[in-house]
Each structure stands twice: as structure tokens, then as C-alpha cells.
Amino acid sequence: MSPKISERGKTQPSSPMRRLEKPFLEAKEKRDRIYQLNIGQPDIETPEEYLNVIKNLKEKVIKYGPSTGLPEYRKTLAKYYQSYGINVGWEDIVVTTGGSEAIIFALSAVCDPGDEVIIPEPFYANYNGFANMAGVKIVPVLSKAETGYALPSIAEIENKITDKTKAIMICNPGNPTGYAYSEEELEQLKTLCKKFSLFLISDEVYREFVYEGKHNSILEKDDFDEYGIITDSLSKRFSLCGARLGCVVSKNKELMSAITRMAQARLCPPTIEQLGAIEVHKLGEEYYSSIRNEYKRRRDTIMKHLNDMEETFCKMPNGAFYMLVKLPIKDCVDFATYMLTEYQLDNETVLISPGNGFYATEGLGMDEIRIAYILNTKDLDRAMVILKEGLKTYRKTRGL
Image (cartoon, rainbow, N blue to C red):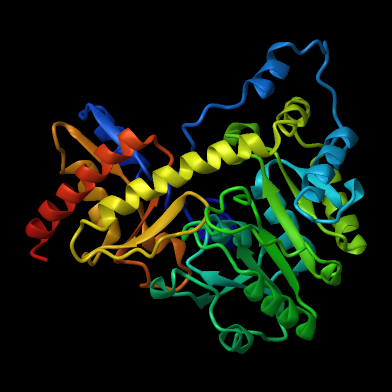
């Protein structure tokens, strides 16, 4: 008899952003170009300031660093957060191997196996995988396309709380929705967490990408120190997806002590990458403003095309660089697969993410796709023409 793997291994979900990898690789052999709108990999160049650190590295031995991150980098991060009115010190920060590890650490530190975390859905699909690894049950509460995926009512969220609930988790601005939470919504969540002694975990990877108004963080005020946890990453902010640098930020000393011990178990986060990150943080608001304006142009380019497509719905997103779009289809996986395997326009096609992978509730999101607007506006124009024409042909083919 063969040995058996764990239930955790059996139930670990695959990424909806990568589930079409096999047909994508096959299609690449046949198509002149596939416009990839499925994954949050920016095409904006990594800053030279970061690359120069790598090029000019003089170290002869790449040693282990401190488990919580290099002190000089943690101090750099503290100054960065303080510039946004987030009053934390460097000792309130643990550097992680990407934002993914930050979320796994946070979930593992606040939950025992079998405990629950409430998350508005749709949500970043890999939360399912992180929760599975930590033995945590995600309890979804539905946000709706008609509101732009605004926070569900507090009554709906409160109704999900049980004696197993340990935290509420949000992504702000949201992936896949692009929704940026208002100060009022965050205050409502904070009040609820205090009432039931729950942590509030806020994934703030896309802080710089709010296009109208400002980003609101859960730790901007000092009345939430024991409850608030920020998880963060450099991947999108500085186009450093492969550098794998993130962090956990909290003023809860007991929590951060637990996360520090978890960090010690994996020894240290990437050392060279932290040296480069110190330099890119010196770029400041002028850099953030330039990339924010570029992504705003890309968002507006996508919306212009969507507004010309029949029976399509997407409320203008205000953050991140994603949008979840309702289409006149019944099976988003079938549609995404069709675009790769059957459709072409001048031997070109597009790759998008099926929307159902961003829901925990079975059957939801089947008429939605996620678009990541990470290409330049010229390429986005072309990609959206292909998507529009492909949708028309698909509906005829499927009798819709």
C-alpha cells in the first residue's frame, strides 16, 4: 500500500490565476502573442536604484541576517509608514519572505487549527491556500458588484461571528475588486473587532494605488494598537515581484513576539533584497505619483472599452490594478479556456482569470472575470479589442 498524503495536502487549492497554465503554454506555441491580463505582474521597470545595489554588491559571503529583518531596513520601513500617518516604530515590524509569508504568519499567530476568519468575498484567491496551510477556516461574507464590492453591512458580518472567530481580514485596496475602503467603513470594522475582541488583518499591498481620494489604513489612529495587523509587500509598489520581500506590522507586543518566533524558525528573510529595498524607499512620493498616474491611465483605458461592450458590468474601481467584470456568460472557466484554445484574432488572443476562483462560496463568480491592467495602454487597447470580439464569437458558439 502506498503512503498517503495529508488532508491538508489533498485540499490545498490551486491558484485560479495559474490554473490555465497548461493550455497557455500550448497556445504560446501557436499564437503570435497572448496578452496576459491574468496575473499581477507589472510591466513597469524595476527602479535602477534597486538593481544598482545588486550589481555593485561587494559582499564575499551572503550571510544569515536577523530573523526579523535587517535593523536598517526595518527603520526604513518605519519611516515609510510614519510618512502615511501610521505611527509605528521599527520594533513593530517583522520583515517576511514576501507578503504571502506575512499573511501565513498572521493567520498562524492569531488562530488555532479549526478557528475561523471572516473575509468579504470576492477576495485574493491565495487566501484560501494560506488559510488551508494554517488550518484556518475562511468564513466568507458577500460583497456585491452593484456597490463596487463595498464592505457588506456590519450586521451581515456580525451574523457570521461564532466562538471560533478570531479575526476579520480585508484587502485594501482590494484584489480582485479594486475597491478602496472608506474611513467610515474601517471605523465600523474596528468597532466590531473591539466589541468581540477580534483581530483585524489588513492586506495593504496596494496602498499607493488609490486613484481618487486617499488610502485609509487601520493603524492611522492610536486607538487600535492591540487589534490591528497590517500585512504588506514590495512586489507591486516597486515592481519587485521576484524579490520576495514583505512584512507584518502591529503594535500588539504579544502577537509580534509570536511572529518573531515563527520568523526564527525559517531563519531570515532575503538579505540582499533588503539592501536594495532600502534604496528604493528613498524614491518617495514623486515616484509613487508617477506610477499611480500610469495605472490610472490604464484603468481608464480598460473602462472605455468595457463601456462599449454590451451586457457587461463593472463599476469604476478606485484602487489596486485589477477589476472584476461581469460578462454575459455562464461559465468563466470555459470562456477563459476558449479564448486560449479556440479563439484568435490575427493569431493573437488574451489570457484572463476566471472570476469564480476569487470566491469561497461554491457557484459564485461564474459570470465574472478578473482583468489585471498591468500592460501599457497600447497593448491594453489591443487586448480589449480581442476580448470584445472573442466574447461575441464565444456567445454564438455556446448559444448564449
